[in-house]
Length: 553
Image (cartoon, rainbow, N blue to C red; front, side, top):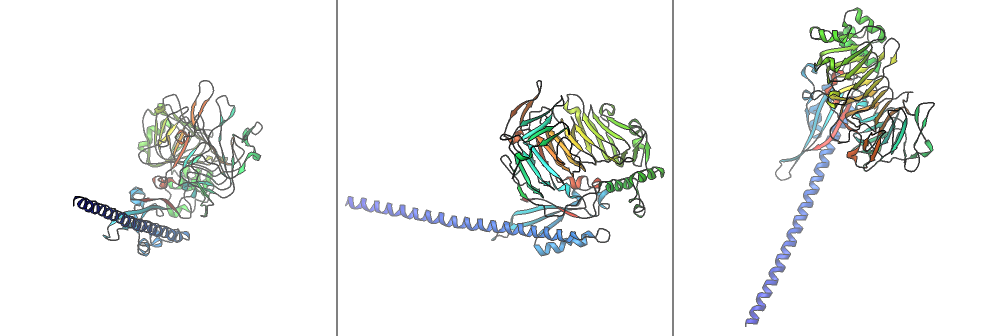
């Protein structure tokens, strides 16, 4: 009997175990099926949300393509309510969050929208996720859409890190060598890594793209006669080469909306002079030198002779100000002389008829927009990094000599250009732009903390040296390009960037790294530039739509 009882218990136990095992397997199968169903629903819902937002943006682009800025009303043309009803999205106008109320009436063609789509639970119908995208409708040129770019060529020498899109109107070149000019004025080439981009970056190339591996063949020679680094063309091959992370590559399908630099400066001069709309058309087509002279004769500006007079009278003058003292004037804003005083132009413009030098032997803070009819030089003095700070809440146009029509050069070195508050400085130069010797031999590197904030543009070519320097830009850098090609044999934008530690006991000493955190040139695109400095930005006669990245909340 006992044996029969034990057998029964064992049999029941085995049956129970198999029953539990079966129920567990069934539960897992049901859960997996349900999880798969939810996951499929989630993916389908996300796709539906993305599709609705993208279709909304596509129609907005179509509606502004043929928009007549002289006769049509932008809000009526966009018909935001109709777009919401058609695509099931929510469109929130957040323009007032970015643009001060005093500019609202002036900026008839700037809008900032958040387009969002709520993903709801199938059973409870409650929103559990929101997909959204910010878009900016603006009458500003296309170059402001890119982290780096040129209408001509883009050359990336060495280990730059780029977070944002890149535009090359012609060709793009990549190498793993950084060229530099030492203090002894000799030219050197230092092997390093190839550049790296963020995973969402796009390289727009309308021509071809080439790479050269300096470990296998020399990429450059130095041409003494031309005083320029020259590519050894036969050592470049078709294709691109990036370190760790590469951008996607495509041609730019959208129209490139260019800026007329001279027309823009004339427009800003007339605005600074307080020109009424009915008078505007009588002046805008005049030569810039003639326009400048006539506005002074009409006493549209307060004309001052020196920086000391500017500091003395700035708070008692209502008009925009011209600094003018002679044909070969140079005006120096010295940090030590300012002694912490903020140069606040408020709603006025400062027009400098000559060269402008910002010399930061102590910090300099300037608020207000500036036109320079000469060259611009920004530099710091001494070893104290804090004393080299130049805080700008400005749009600066460097036109060059108005009487001789010579483009103005811009040189930034050994200084830290920051922003005041949440604003972004925009610097536009008609002549060549060079950035060098920023945070020299700094070896505490980071992708996050910028030491230059703003958007830098030149009608000519631009060269950036980040070998001994450490340059971290929050904003953008664009060289339209022309026949000039300072230091290099191609026109456009040239970036030289080492990756690793650099010291200078006698001459430069290098410790190479492939870690992107050790990049000595970093640029992170900042779209706030379109709206934070919108009152001083170049104006074009066509609207464009700037689309920010997709976010999920």
